[in-house]
Image 1 (spheres, helix red, strand yellow):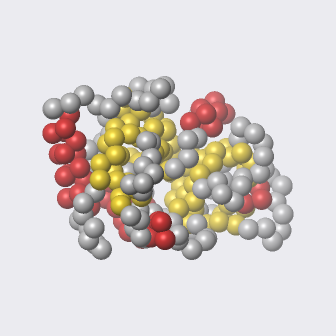
Image 2 (cartoon, helix red, strand yellow):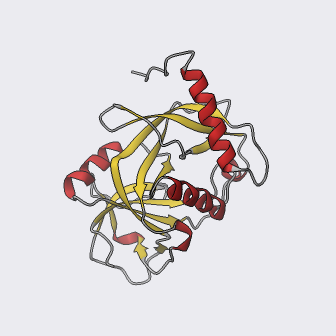
Image 3 (cartoon, helix red, strand yellow):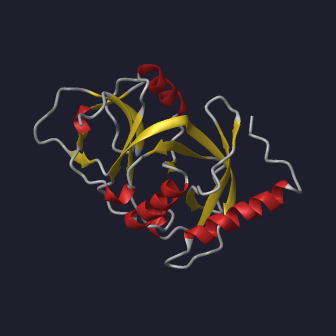
Length: 228
């Protein structure tokens, strides 16, 4: 299958203390439990670009590629890890996160983040079973909104694939190819610190504990107000 002309592209690696194989295993559990839907956490606020993607194509896709650079210490051994428990759509409406979904990120107590982001993805196929037969030519990509080349520091970008290809330029394997489904892109809030630091955590248990804590909190206080 040919790669789409317009798509969201994200490179992934070790994150929040989890290696690639652990992340894919956890996301496959989530996908299976949610009838094909899984949330893919990203650090970039690409909402305007996602809106443009939705304007350009009725069938938006996301392509996920393993990153080539070694994992940073902040990613492989973070000071702390949080789970994000509230979500807002591109329109700013509250969106209930699926009960089997969990988006995590590293957390620095000295410089905490107020928000994280997630792509809402769908795949009818198991994630771990997808191969790397398709490749993305890095030099062929342009940022959809600006037309500029994708920078090396852009881990996640909404792009246009140009047909012009430079032989010998860097390529990335497509490990996962999925559909973007409503509401497509979420702004996440309400971080909760994860206390389980075991090397092989039971993610089903952690997901359940996070939602139990959040539900208990909801019964006592209102959800946090978005910053203006």
